Image 1 (cartoon, rainbow, N blue to C red):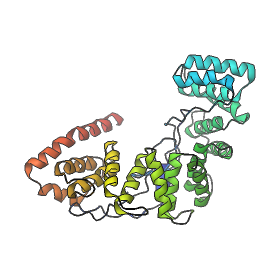
Image 2 (cartoon, rainbow, N blue to C red):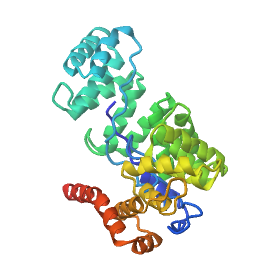
Image 3 (cartoon, rainbow, N blue to C red):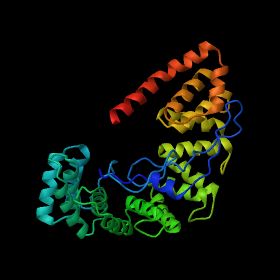
Length: 358
């Protein structure tokens, strides 16, 4: 469903204070340093930890989640139309299903269509009402969706307490996104007493069924020894799973673990590949670590032009590195100029993006 969640990033940032390790020297990086704060998963559902900078409590919806599965064959028409983008057909089929069968899944689908203005004019009040009716009939996806509306204030006044109750109910019924978000609330320690062990339980239940943000969050707890015994091997296993699912923050942390051989067999070449992938997706930490690798040729062939390029881009993204500054100054003018030219489109794009947000 297209319901967003909180941004875990900040909650873990408040609760977990990871020690900052100075950036690796561009001249001879013996190891890559981890992000200054526990990575925060990007709002793929909002709450979640993330490499660059976790943020506090849930605020608004942003990332789509898959539509709830339709258990009955009769509902396949509505959900099939929804998944193919035939929203008017989905609306008509779901409406008919509700009228004939009072089907909770069809009610949830109607809530989804109203909440996102798909095939019909957006109407948060109608969305909330359909979600409420489905939730009363025990539909866990509707409970989760309605919780998000309460947290964001889209169903009226912001009601975090009611949102938390709905998350708890949905999590109890096995909704992994709800379990993940509820875990973040236990880390935040505002609606509930702070309880890292309870958060770890909730993250684990979601991680076991493939929730990527939960895998990343649980990895952070294992890395720090919060709510669970400190276990770098388990942390890296979870990071690897989230990295495989293309979670950028997990890719960065897993790559750093691989480069340093922390909790996993050392593999500098694979680390460089993962960092390059995350760097191209715009992660400043990955860009900085990749620049260090390219400056000295560990895990990848030395490439001063590319090292300068990624260093400049990382600095524009807020990650500075004094040893790399010195490395740049030591390069011939033509090499510096080539690196600056290669970085310019990225830096210009960053400036445009910031200007459009201001």
